[in-house]
Image 1 (cartoon, rainbow over the protein chains, first blue to last red):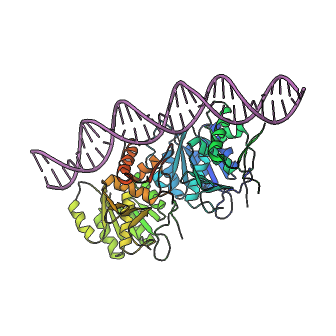
Image 2 (spheres, rainbow over the protein chains, first blue to last red):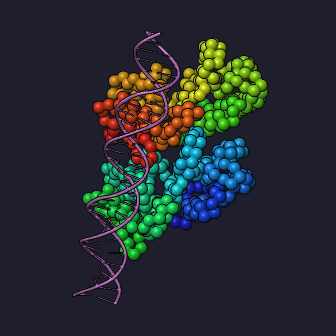
Length: 246
Length: 246
DNA sequence: CCCCCCGCTCAGAGGGGTCTCAGAGGTTAT
DNA sequence: ATAACCTCTGAGACCCCTCTGAGCGGGGGG
């Protein structure tokens, strides 16, 4: 079985080969960071900076999914989508778009099973959306029996956005939810505040790593409340999520 | 069992293979969005832009149903229907038509078991009509025992357009009904406002996502009135329909 | 043993998302 | 023609979420 650099089992295609993803964005920095994050998931990633290159690369790579900026130097993402779908009708598309711009033109996108995220986004969100798309499209081989993350008696249903600890419902804010998702996708692994900040917060976040401490504290109050703690501090290194010793 | 991209069990042909649908419309954008939405249902979809292509594709695909624009560049939908019925008498046809145009000629069609929707339509409506046609024609294998959606003590009879909560009748406007149907077809799954807008509102709707909030508020007053709430807001994500914890 | 620094938590400001009301405009039914 | 209903817009209020800053506590090194 192929694995991610983080040691998790990777989502794979039905034949066991890595999922193939094409990243299309004209901002090299953003493309770079996206490419890195998706490779980290164990996927095979190629990047393109404009629509023409994207289509050419897609014909060669035959990707399972495309991460596609709406605004491109030579064309827009919607035209690329249409061309893509004529030759590869089963490909999943995740659009990247500015919050204010063209939100109305997004109409119809999610209806076809595709999805979008607005800039600025967090890498966790992009990866989660992409995983969701691929899973629903039946392209990814399931390792477990669904969109549920389980660590000890802590259970997260990503579709319902529902978290339970020992069967009890835990209500979380959006940021708390994403932070916990990141922790649960990396159980028993020490994550530094910098790592968490890079993954869970938007790439343009200018604030201090202090927020991470704050949100860890929020999570503890809700997730560990009165129970055996699962969120542990590793002084000078970061945080770990692990179930009680058994 | 084959499943839709949304994870629901798909309607299948009696032999278990996906239902085959042909989309005929000369507007590429509309054909694209229709094709995507029907694929999302787990069906096998082909598209054609004119009558001649449609007939050729139909001979090859042998579709169970055809979504057919009445106005075509080379001919009209009625002629296509006649030709189709000579070679494939069992095929179901869902007509797409402008509101004002030839409504009387359509009336005769529906007597033959076929159906129609007027432009602009919502994707939920097209999918629901198509499901109804296929079910009544006996082409689809039933998973449940009929056109009833059930979530907790909330029951919807799609044919009768009747909704009851805990046995009590709930009267809904057309938009409220379609919104609730979409929610009930995706229970325990968080649906974003964009998703809801794309599926429940017409494809040409240019307004804001604010309408969704408004209609959710209407639904709550009618469906959740005085009872344990089933419609929940997930801040920053969307809405989810789920029965109370049991 | 003491001090320094890292981490934790509280309090509060600011912003943004959501809910609801009121009303205009259009359509359908009587 | 009139009434009833349905749909959507706009505005305002409210509440939650997010982040900043400061003070406190504890662990570990000197």
